Length: 297
Image 1 (cartoon, one colour):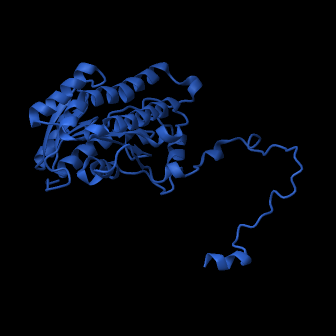
Image 2 (cartoon, rainbow, N blue to C red):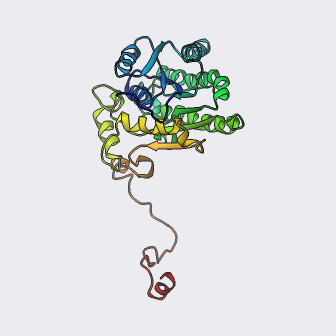
Image 3 (tube, rainbow, N blue to C red):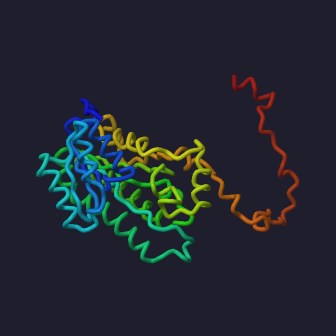
Protein backbone atom coordinates (compact mmCIF):
# COMPACT_ATOMS: atom_id res chain seq x y z
CA UNK A 1 0.00 0.00 0.00
CA UNK A 2 2.86 2.37 -0.81
CA UNK A 3 1.49 5.91 -1.16
CA UNK A 4 1.84 7.43 -4.57
CA UNK A 5 1.19 10.88 -5.94
CA UNK A 6 -2.50 10.11 -6.02
CA UNK A 7 -5.78 11.91 -6.36
CA UNK A 8 -5.77 12.93 -2.68
CA UNK A 9 -2.13 13.97 -2.33
CA UNK A 10 -1.72 16.64 0.32
CA UNK A 11 -5.32 16.53 1.49
CA UNK A 12 -6.20 16.04 5.16
CA UNK A 13 -9.15 13.75 5.84
CA UNK A 14 -11.07 12.55 8.86
CA UNK A 15 -12.66 9.12 8.51
CA UNK A 16 -15.16 8.39 11.28
CA UNK A 17 -15.75 4.75 12.06
CA UNK A 18 -12.40 4.31 10.37
CA UNK A 19 -11.15 1.27 12.23
CA UNK A 20 -13.20 -1.55 10.74
CA UNK A 21 -15.34 -2.65 7.83
CA UNK A 22 -15.84 -0.04 5.12
CA UNK A 23 -14.16 2.57 7.34
CA UNK A 24 -10.89 0.66 7.37
CA UNK A 25 -10.99 0.40 3.58
CA UNK A 26 -11.66 4.13 3.23
CA UNK A 27 -8.82 5.01 5.61
CA UNK A 28 -6.33 2.83 3.73
CA UNK A 29 -7.56 3.88 0.29
CA UNK A 30 -7.22 7.56 1.19
CA UNK A 31 -3.73 7.00 2.56
CA UNK A 32 -2.75 5.13 -0.58
CA UNK A 33 -4.00 8.07 -2.63
CA UNK A 34 -1.72 10.42 -0.67
CA UNK A 35 -4.03 11.83 2.01
CA UNK A 36 -3.11 12.46 5.64
CA UNK A 37 -5.77 10.53 7.54
CA UNK A 38 -7.29 10.89 11.00
CA UNK A 39 -8.75 7.46 11.75
CA UNK A 40 -11.56 8.07 14.25
CA UNK A 41 -13.52 5.55 16.27
CA UNK A 42 -14.51 4.28 19.67
CA UNK A 43 -11.74 3.36 22.11
CA UNK A 44 -12.54 -0.33 21.63
CA UNK A 45 -12.20 -0.08 17.83
CA UNK A 46 -8.91 -1.11 16.18
CA UNK A 47 -8.17 2.44 15.02
CA UNK A 48 -4.62 2.29 16.40
CA UNK A 49 -3.90 -0.90 14.51
CA UNK A 50 -5.21 0.59 11.27
CA UNK A 51 -2.97 3.62 11.78
CA UNK A 52 0.03 1.37 12.39
CA UNK A 53 -0.68 -0.54 9.19
CA UNK A 54 -1.02 2.68 7.19
CA UNK A 55 2.24 4.05 8.57
CA UNK A 56 4.04 0.74 8.00
CA UNK A 57 2.97 0.92 4.35
CA UNK A 58 4.43 4.42 4.00
CA UNK A 59 1.32 6.50 4.62
CA UNK A 60 0.56 9.16 7.20
CA UNK A 61 -2.22 8.72 9.74
CA UNK A 62 -3.11 9.36 13.36
CA UNK A 63 -5.79 7.87 15.58
CA UNK A 64 -8.58 9.65 17.41
CA UNK A 65 -10.80 7.83 19.88
CA UNK A 66 -14.02 9.05 21.41
CA UNK A 67 -17.77 9.25 21.00
CA UNK A 68 -18.26 11.78 18.21
CA UNK A 69 -22.02 11.90 18.74
CA UNK A 70 -21.18 14.31 21.57
CA UNK A 71 -20.58 17.91 20.54
CA UNK A 72 -17.32 18.45 22.44
CA UNK A 73 -15.83 15.17 21.21
CA UNK A 74 -16.70 15.99 17.62
CA UNK A 75 -15.02 19.37 17.99
CA UNK A 76 -11.97 17.71 19.54
CA UNK A 77 -11.74 15.29 16.60
CA UNK A 78 -11.73 18.13 14.09
CA UNK A 79 -9.23 20.07 16.17
CA UNK A 80 -6.96 17.02 16.31
CA UNK A 81 -6.81 16.96 12.51
CA UNK A 82 -6.00 20.67 12.33
CA UNK A 83 -3.41 20.47 15.11
CA UNK A 84 -1.68 17.48 13.54
CA UNK A 85 -1.81 18.40 9.85
CA UNK A 86 -2.64 22.13 9.77
CA UNK A 87 -5.96 22.03 7.96
CA UNK A 88 -8.97 19.90 7.00
CA UNK A 89 -9.98 19.10 3.43
CA UNK A 90 -12.30 16.11 3.69
CA UNK A 91 -14.76 14.84 6.27
CA UNK A 92 -15.91 11.26 5.79
CA UNK A 93 -18.97 10.58 7.93
CA UNK A 94 -18.72 6.82 7.83
CA UNK A 95 -19.56 5.99 11.46
CA UNK A 96 -22.82 4.15 11.97
CA UNK A 97 -24.45 1.15 13.58
CA UNK A 98 -26.82 -1.68 12.59
CA UNK A 99 -27.68 -3.18 15.99
CA UNK A 100 -30.79 -5.30 15.47
CA UNK A 101 -33.26 -6.75 13.02
CA UNK A 102 -36.95 -7.22 13.70
CA UNK A 103 -40.35 -6.21 12.45
CA UNK A 104 -41.22 -2.75 13.73
CA UNK A 105 -43.82 -3.94 16.24
CA UNK A 106 -41.08 -5.85 18.06
CA UNK A 107 -38.14 -3.55 17.39
CA UNK A 108 -36.22 -2.69 20.59
CA UNK A 109 -36.53 0.94 21.61
CA UNK A 110 -32.95 0.94 22.86
CA UNK A 111 -31.70 -0.17 19.43
CA UNK A 112 -33.60 2.71 17.81
CA UNK A 113 -32.13 5.20 20.26
CA UNK A 114 -28.66 3.74 19.66
CA UNK A 115 -29.03 4.36 15.93
CA UNK A 116 -30.29 7.90 16.43
CA UNK A 117 -27.16 8.60 18.47
CA UNK A 118 -24.62 6.95 16.19
CA UNK A 119 -26.17 7.38 12.74
CA UNK A 120 -27.68 10.85 13.08
CA UNK A 121 -26.08 12.73 15.95
CA UNK A 122 -22.55 11.76 14.90
CA UNK A 123 -23.14 12.97 11.33
CA UNK A 124 -24.67 16.25 12.51
CA UNK A 125 -22.02 16.97 15.14
CA UNK A 126 -19.05 16.18 12.92
CA UNK A 127 -20.46 18.14 9.99
CA UNK A 128 -21.14 21.21 12.08
CA UNK A 129 -17.71 21.06 13.73
CA UNK A 130 -15.88 20.59 10.42
CA UNK A 131 -17.60 23.24 8.29
CA UNK A 132 -15.56 26.30 9.42
CA UNK A 133 -12.37 24.50 8.39
CA UNK A 134 -13.79 23.04 5.19
CA UNK A 135 -14.87 26.52 4.15
CA UNK A 136 -11.25 27.66 4.42
CA UNK A 137 -9.98 24.88 2.14
CA UNK A 138 -13.04 24.62 -0.11
CA UNK A 139 -13.19 21.07 1.07
CA UNK A 140 -15.91 18.46 0.98
CA UNK A 141 -17.97 15.97 2.94
CA UNK A 142 -18.75 12.40 1.97
CA UNK A 143 -21.30 10.64 4.16
CA UNK A 144 -22.42 7.05 4.48
CA UNK A 145 -25.99 6.74 3.33
CA UNK A 146 -27.54 3.45 2.30
CA UNK A 147 -29.79 1.92 -0.28
CA UNK A 148 -32.03 1.45 2.77
CA UNK A 149 -32.21 5.22 3.13
CA UNK A 150 -33.59 5.40 -0.40
CA UNK A 151 -35.98 2.44 -0.43
CA UNK A 152 -36.53 1.53 3.22
CA UNK A 153 -35.28 -1.56 5.00
CA UNK A 154 -37.67 -4.42 5.86
CA UNK A 155 -36.81 -5.99 9.22
CA UNK A 156 -34.98 -2.82 10.19
CA UNK A 157 -37.20 0.09 9.25
CA UNK A 158 -35.59 2.49 11.78
CA UNK A 159 -32.18 1.95 10.17
CA UNK A 160 -33.50 3.03 6.79
CA UNK A 161 -35.09 6.02 8.51
CA UNK A 162 -31.81 7.17 10.02
CA UNK A 163 -30.10 6.89 6.65
CA UNK A 164 -32.96 8.76 5.02
CA UNK A 165 -32.17 11.62 7.40
CA UNK A 166 -28.53 11.56 6.31
CA UNK A 167 -29.54 11.72 2.64
CA UNK A 168 -31.81 14.73 3.10
CA UNK A 169 -29.54 16.44 5.62
CA UNK A 170 -26.45 16.30 3.45
CA UNK A 171 -28.31 17.40 0.32
CA UNK A 172 -29.35 20.44 2.31
CA UNK A 173 -25.75 20.97 3.37
CA UNK A 174 -24.67 20.75 -0.27
CA UNK A 175 -26.97 23.60 -1.29
CA UNK A 176 -26.33 25.71 1.80
CA UNK A 177 -22.54 25.44 1.67
CA UNK A 178 -22.06 25.74 -2.09
CA UNK A 179 -21.44 29.48 -1.78
CA UNK A 180 -18.37 28.65 0.32
CA UNK A 181 -17.06 26.15 -2.22
CA UNK A 182 -17.87 23.19 0.04
CA UNK A 183 -19.27 20.07 -1.61
CA UNK A 184 -21.29 17.33 0.09
CA UNK A 185 -22.12 13.93 -1.34
CA UNK A 186 -23.41 10.56 -0.21
CA UNK A 187 -22.28 7.01 -0.82
CA UNK A 188 -25.08 4.48 -0.45
CA UNK A 189 -23.72 0.96 0.01
CA UNK A 190 -25.90 -2.05 -0.51
CA UNK A 191 -25.04 -5.49 0.87
CA UNK A 192 -21.29 -5.34 1.50
CA UNK A 193 -19.10 -8.22 2.64
CA UNK A 194 -18.62 -7.02 6.21
CA UNK A 195 -19.73 -8.31 9.60
CA UNK A 196 -23.13 -6.67 9.21
CA UNK A 197 -24.33 -8.95 6.40
CA UNK A 198 -23.31 -12.32 7.85
CA UNK A 199 -25.51 -14.16 10.33
CA UNK A 200 -22.47 -15.29 12.31
CA UNK A 201 -21.21 -11.78 13.00
CA UNK A 202 -24.17 -9.43 12.57
CA UNK A 203 -27.86 -9.10 13.45
CA UNK A 204 -29.19 -10.87 10.35
CA UNK A 205 -30.59 -14.36 10.63
CA UNK A 206 -29.95 -16.92 7.89
CA UNK A 207 -33.19 -16.10 6.09
CA UNK A 208 -32.52 -12.36 5.96
CA UNK A 209 -28.94 -12.97 4.89
CA UNK A 210 -30.11 -15.16 2.01
CA UNK A 211 -32.75 -12.67 0.88
CA UNK A 212 -30.27 -9.81 1.08
CA UNK A 213 -27.87 -11.47 -1.35
CA UNK A 214 -30.66 -12.77 -3.58
CA UNK A 215 -31.84 -9.20 -4.07
CA UNK A 216 -28.57 -8.14 -5.73
CA UNK A 217 -28.68 -8.26 -9.56
CA UNK A 218 -24.91 -8.76 -9.67
CA UNK A 219 -25.40 -11.84 -7.53
CA UNK A 220 -22.94 -11.16 -4.73
CA UNK A 221 -22.00 -8.88 -1.87
CA UNK A 222 -19.79 -5.92 -2.67
CA UNK A 223 -16.38 -5.52 -1.10
CA UNK A 224 -15.36 -2.77 1.31
CA UNK A 225 -12.69 -1.72 -1.17
CA UNK A 226 -15.24 -1.28 -3.95
CA UNK A 227 -17.08 1.17 -1.69
CA UNK A 228 -13.87 2.96 -0.70
CA UNK A 229 -13.02 3.52 -4.36
CA UNK A 230 -16.17 5.63 -4.76
CA UNK A 231 -15.41 7.60 -1.59
CA UNK A 232 -11.96 8.41 -2.97
CA UNK A 233 -13.40 9.73 -6.22
CA UNK A 234 -15.99 11.92 -4.51
CA UNK A 235 -13.41 13.32 -2.08
CA UNK A 236 -11.01 14.18 -4.89
CA UNK A 237 -10.80 17.18 -7.18
CA UNK A 238 -11.92 14.90 -10.01
CA UNK A 239 -15.43 15.27 -8.56
CA UNK A 240 -15.22 19.07 -8.43
CA UNK A 241 -18.61 19.47 -10.16
CA UNK A 242 -20.39 16.83 -8.08
CA UNK A 243 -22.38 17.94 -5.05
CA UNK A 244 -25.67 16.88 -3.51
CA UNK A 245 -25.34 13.52 -5.25
CA UNK A 246 -25.95 10.01 -3.96
CA UNK A 247 -23.76 7.30 -5.44
CA UNK A 248 -25.22 3.84 -4.80
CA UNK A 249 -22.63 1.08 -4.54
CA UNK A 250 -25.16 -1.71 -4.29
CA UNK A 251 -24.77 -4.13 -7.17
CA UNK A 252 -28.05 -2.86 -8.61
CA UNK A 253 -30.28 -3.34 -5.55
CA UNK A 254 -31.96 0.05 -5.90
CA UNK A 255 -33.03 -0.70 -9.48
CA UNK A 256 -34.14 -4.25 -8.74
CA UNK A 257 -37.52 -5.41 -7.56
CA UNK A 258 -35.82 -8.02 -5.40
CA UNK A 259 -37.01 -11.40 -4.11
CA UNK A 260 -39.43 -10.24 -1.44
CA UNK A 261 -42.53 -11.47 -3.28
CA UNK A 262 -41.47 -14.99 -2.38
CA UNK A 263 -42.24 -14.14 1.23
CA UNK A 264 -45.94 -13.37 0.66
CA UNK A 265 -48.37 -16.22 1.50
CA UNK A 266 -50.18 -17.54 -1.56
CA UNK A 267 -53.62 -16.50 -0.27
CA UNK A 268 -52.43 -12.90 0.02
CA UNK A 269 -50.72 -12.96 -3.35
CA UNK A 270 -53.98 -13.56 -5.25
CA UNK A 271 -55.20 -10.82 -7.54
CA UNK A 272 -58.46 -9.22 -6.34
CA UNK A 273 -61.66 -9.78 -8.26
CA UNK A 274 -62.58 -6.67 -10.20
CA UNK A 275 -65.95 -5.06 -10.84
CA UNK A 276 -65.14 -3.30 -14.11
CA UNK A 277 -66.05 -4.97 -17.40
CA UNK A 278 -62.56 -5.16 -18.81
CA UNK A 279 -62.27 -7.03 -22.08
CA UNK A 280 -58.89 -5.94 -23.34
CA UNK A 281 -56.57 -6.33 -20.36
CA UNK A 282 -54.25 -8.59 -22.31
CA UNK A 283 -54.61 -6.83 -25.67
CA UNK A 284 -52.17 -4.31 -27.09
CA UNK A 285 -49.11 -4.64 -29.24
CA UNK A 286 -45.68 -4.29 -27.71
CA UNK A 287 -43.72 -5.09 -30.86
CA UNK A 288 -42.91 -2.42 -33.45
CA UNK A 289 -45.87 -2.17 -35.81
CA UNK A 290 -45.10 -2.60 -39.49
CA UNK A 291 -46.60 0.79 -40.37
CA UNK A 292 -44.29 2.49 -37.84
CA UNK A 293 -41.08 0.77 -38.84
CA UNK A 294 -40.21 3.21 -41.61
CA UNK A 295 -40.50 6.21 -39.32
CA UNK A 296 -37.95 4.74 -36.93
CA UNK A 297 -35.28 4.02 -39.50
